[in-house]
Amino acid sequence: MMPANDTPLTEWPLSALAGQAHLAPHSTGFASLVLRLRLALRRDPDPVKRSLVEQILTAAAESEQRLIDQAQRIAELEALSTTDELTGLPNRRAFESFMAADLARASRDGHGGTLAFLDLDRFKAINDRHGHAAGDAVLCQIALRLQPAARATDCLARLHGDEFVLAMPGATRDQAEVRLSELATRVEKQPLRFGDALIPVGISYGLSSYDGSTDLPTLLRDCDHAMYIRKQARRDD
Image 1 (cartoon, one colour):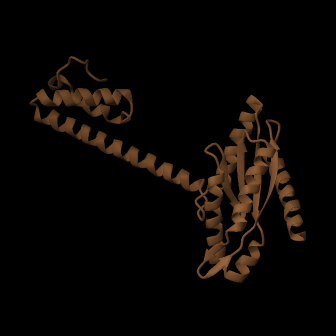
Image 2 (cartoon, helix red, strand yellow):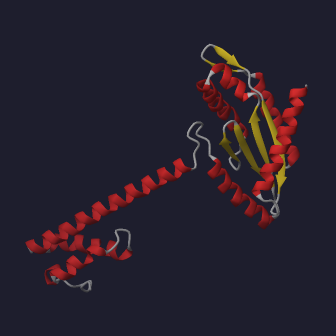
Image 3 (cartoon, one colour):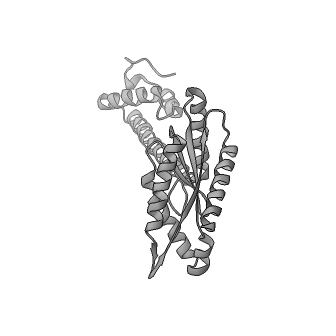
């Protein structure tokens, strides 16, 4: 047990001092102890107890730094686990987490949104003709071109390969159609450069609106189906 607040450091038994080392650095009890020890250290001449107090304070500082380093590392690992390594966009895990939260929100307030599923046209041909390095460069450049279309409340993510999604909370299907149509037109008007090659790239997309009763697998299936129909129509033109 710690001595009373008015007990001089010289009257603290060594066991009482040593017994405080188990307190967590962020705990209220530990913060209070550190403050009292710092004040007592200024006026207590006992060299043995002063040495023990200094050891406790040093251990506290080291523990504090370890906790800070650990928290930073955890944050870095969490960011890596939700980020697509190639493009820097959120990955499937981040997208699924976002949609779980937004579908729950839609269930509560009744205001849904629209999901877009985007797929690059003839991406396999780009890899076959220019190589996989060119394909990776195309994906990175497409990611950069898609980002301006995403609002702060949206989630733009890369799912896999040349598949991207754009979740638009609060957007109607008509509003999403306007945004995606303009986006696809801008992408197609500007071929992507890789070395000396100019690579034309097209985007096909499918849309599906959601509300609180929608589940994500169904939503993705509907978007993918709508995208496939659009892609086939573009090939037939």
